[in-house]
Amino acid sequence: MSTSEDVTGPLAGVRVLDLSSVLMGPAATRTLGDLGADVIFVEPAKGDRNRTMGSGPVEEFSGIALNLLRNKRSIAVDLKQSRGRQAFLDIAATCDVMITNLRPAPLHRLGLHYEAVRDVRDDIVFCRAHGYPSSSEQANAPAYDDIIQSASGVGDLFRRMGAEPMLLPSLVADKVCGLTIANSVTAALFHKAQTGQGQCIEIPMVDVMRAFVLTEHGSGAISEPPVADAGYARILTPERRPQPTADGWINILPYDHSHYVALFEAGGRPDLAADERFATPIERVTHSDSLYRDVATVLTQRTTADWLNFCEEHGIPATEAATLDELIDQLPIDEHPVAGPFRVIPPPEQFSETPPSIRRPAPGIGEHGREILAEIGYDSAEIDGLIDAGVLTVP
Image 1 (spheres, rainbow, N blue to C red):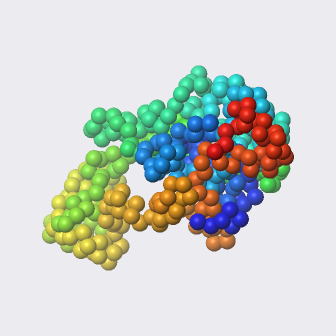
Image 2 (cartoon, rainbow, N blue to C red):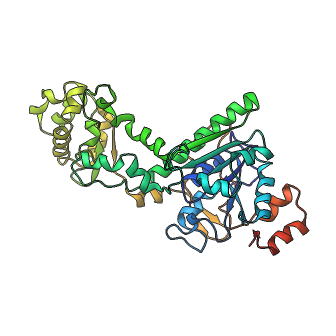
Image 3 (cartoon, helix red, strand yellow):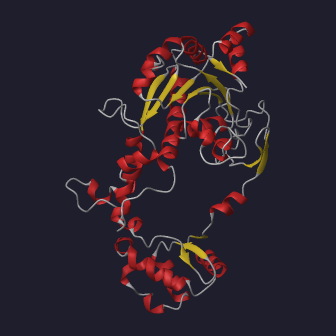
């Protein structure tokens, strides 16, 4: 882990005020932090919920939080007290970006809506992300990943596969929306760099996930009038999955006619080499079910290693099917000052000139409260007064 001074990312010098919780917002600000931004994470005195999501080595640091909260400084402020609200606005006045996933009503009750923050920093990039558009009747409805997956049609995908509606076993809505937040904030910072103008960004989760799902699954139903049912057939077949080999599991995706010919001949099914089901892209999509089944049948004839070598030789996309344990074993190990050794999920982005970095370990609750307030001009007596009044919580 590099030091806090080793800021090399493209967002070095950008200051982000993070009033978000659980996973969506914190995932967005982790990305911004990895890319060099100074992220100030505002959380309640008992800590954010992600600190206790799942198990972890010590209290306050779940396995999720150890990676999710890195590159952030924590301040624990009671925003329901007027002095806490003022401290928040004083910090906001020094920030380029504010991100929150509070719904419109509680944000206005706290007096921390866009107009209030803009009064103290007129060029702020203010991003609010919540379940539904603020212009809708559901603007203040609570929404978590499960709710948004269902509202955006994820459950219906399973129904169209012939199963009962269910949800993807991943917080995909939170993570996709987190990436959208990071992308939108970065775009707004580019606009600000060109014009000096800040702005308010709204990220309704249900709209983000609807666009995500319908990108391919709108399919022929996007035409007006529709020329086919919604749903992309190749993706909706239950046969689309890792396939067993003679000694393990693999995933092979023949993508053109020559791939199928080579695969079926190598698998002892030369009779399928002239099959019209894979003669054209449209035919391959139409017959996805039976083609996947035929491919799975021939794959049992050889080992995983044999098929991987074969696919490399013939340019066929393929991979051994990894397990979660195998993926975790590939991660580097670092030392957290409180939680001890842990596996680090490295930043996935690669920049030739401004590489991302991990400069700060996940902080304790309110660990940097004194430091942050001192930076913006609060003296020791003022900070102690906030602590005594229960406005500021420090370790």
